[in-house]
Image 1: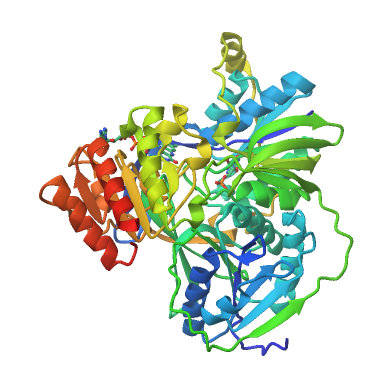
Image 2: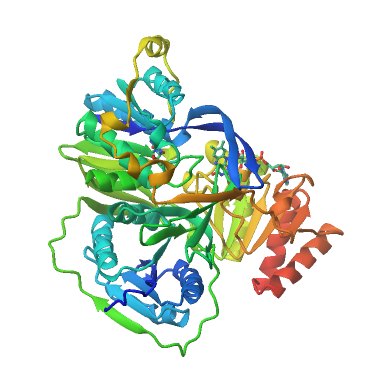
Length: 335
Length: 261
Ligand SMILES: Cc1cc2nc3c(=O)[nH]c(=O)nc-3n(C[C@H](O)[C@H](O)[C@H](O)COP(=O)(O)OP(=O)(O)OC[C@H]3O[C@@H](n4cnc5c(N)ncnc54)[C@H](O)[C@@H]3O)c2cc1C
Ligand SMILES: Nc1ncnc2c1ncn2[C@@H]1O[C@H](COP(=O)(O)O)[C@@H](O)[C@H]1O
């Protein structure tokens, strides 16, 4: 690629894949990237590490001008170090202005390596990104201090300007199947892969089919459930809705449910289409990690509970009455 | 097995004051403590030492008050503690913080393992661990929930993954970050408390570390804080009214409208 010296540099998006499918998080990133690129007058490229990845055309339909399909240097491990090395080489060569990636477990671990190697800044887990039209810099906004503040960061000199994005914080725009884009296959120079980490086994112990970060609906229980067995009450609702099951921190601390279900500052972040909070008070550490959900339904018996301040809809009442009613009605509706 | 634990002193209580004119943070918090995940990091380091011998070094970059947290680390069993402290470090972003820490760790001598917390509760980035690994030229595994086995030159462990857990093997030396699932941190022993009172905390400044001050602090960091604000609460909230039955029906109507059902 020939770069004009005055070209602003492209917006790049790391499109993550899992089991050969582009992950849902990528679409919102592309839509956001498109918006930023339009403000800068530049192009959007998506990068994907994988072999035969399905769903690449979807990235173009969502706004990518180009997709780089990078042959995974270590497809079995999907090794972070070798992917980082490859990404660094591509960035040095093409010099994008901006790189965005999902703050998934993989992205949060891989992308800082890339930023460190390029000696550039990186804003973590952003929930808002925009171009300052005067300075043309990327304004990166993220939650900090236990969800009590929003901090806006910029990276004035070093390039690229890098950010990881809270999974699903940006909504996918309308897809246009007629959009044209280029697919470029990149074969990394065949250096021998020397992975220093090796995946030995995958333990599927979440005991649920729906992954939390990917779920359209999350049903989340808090201390209001009272005891471990009562998770059944909301698990039933989750099952009927095809939802993933989450928890606030106290049930995890008390051993009612595994840590992998914890939503919050020290757990996972989610932004599903529907978030149902059952018996959760709405502490900042919890709210910070779910408040970008499209619709939040709170069920709590205390009308003054702070969760109602972030909720789209609130039902004041005993969850042991409300949840089974909801479950029964949804079951009827879903046949 | 020589282990370096990176620990940060963080506010135990957030008391936020923002200057509305400049958007700068006037006050962040009080009641300093060791970042909770870093307590898990320290505990795991202690367990590795008890099993495999060696020593545990605690390292922190921060203001001189952070000595108190390092003293606590000694009370909990760390063999030595180092504070990287210089006015020039103020306002460092994660790149600069990792850079300073990497020089401190190098100066301590090559450890077998560096253990970080998954993230801090004030900065909340989780970036320092992987950035540090890159700067030290070491492999990295994030969100470790269990160390299964340490053998010649490698460690086998479980890490959090989207679908549950992954079992991974990492060559040593290497860097890991840990989640709280990994252990329950111990309380300090009486003997530890006594020792920590007399223990000396090593302090290294920019010159002693060989840090180029143009590359750190608020001026030298690649990333800059533009402003802080309070999170906006949504204005769309609606408490549903009427009998429970009618509230449930209203809700179903809304969810249908939003095409969620
Ligand atoms: C460093 C740090 C990190 C943290 N990280 C996290 C985190 O990642 N995730 C997290 O969630 N928290 C986290 N917390 C804890 C957080 O501050 C709160 O303590 C926690 O979120 C409260 O959980 P809860 O809402 O389930 O419980 P509570 O605050 O006890 O609320 C329970 C609610 O249930 C309601 N209730 C009780 N019975 C019923 C009933 N029968 N029907 C309906 N409602 C009922 C009550 O009215 C109450 O509002 C963290 C705290 C700290 C200090
Ligand atoms: N100033 C610091 N001094 C020592 N360790 C730190 C410091 N900042 C971050 N860390 C380590 O890096 C981890 C991740 O921090 P962060 O990237 O700020 O979320 C923490 O849990 C610590 O182990």
